[in-house]
Each structure stands twice: as structure tokens, then as C-alpha cells.
Image (cartoon, rainbow, N blue to C red; front, side, top):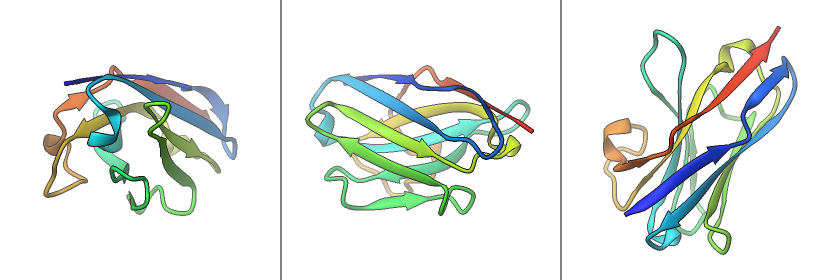
Length: 124
């Protein structure tokens, strides 16, 4: 199995940027397809972005396209989410997640392992 720890969250003004990191330990990181999700108060957890094992294929929610970039560094066992042009509606707890295989990368239920989350707050 793999353990995931997110970092990089914080308070930022609208229009600003943040880079989230997801450090993995345990089983070989490159074996896992990685996703980022977020959950705002009173809302369901929603898909943000995902990246395949090699890092060559990426997938984004419509809300993240053109503003967020997901990457991974398999040598450092870390996945990243670079967020720019942040909006107040991006405020949420952001989670990274890992799975060995999937059929629907946007479904939280497809991921076996989750980090504890990191809070992102965007002020207007």
C-alpha cells in the first residue's frame, strides 16, 4: 500500500497561485495513477485533476482546465497540483488519492488510498 501526505495549502487572494504537493511512501509510487480531489463545506468531494503512471497523460475537471496543472516526479515520489488564477470558489480541502487501476478516474470510489487533505482558502 501507499501513504500520502499533502502540503502546500494556505490562504491566498483571488488571482493568486499555490502549488500543492503530495508525497508518497510505501509501495512504488510509479505504480499508482494519481488524482486530486477537493471538498468544500457542505458539498460532495469532487474531481479536480488526474495523471497517469508515466505522467504523460493528464485529465482535468472543467473547473480546473487552463488554470491548474497536475504533474508528478516519480524519482521524488511526489505529485503536484499547480493552481493559478485562483477564485473564491476554489476554497476547499484538497486531497490527493492513488489507485493501481481505474475505470472512471473522476470517481472518488475508484481510489484506494487518500491523504489527510490540505486546506486552500481563496479570499475575494
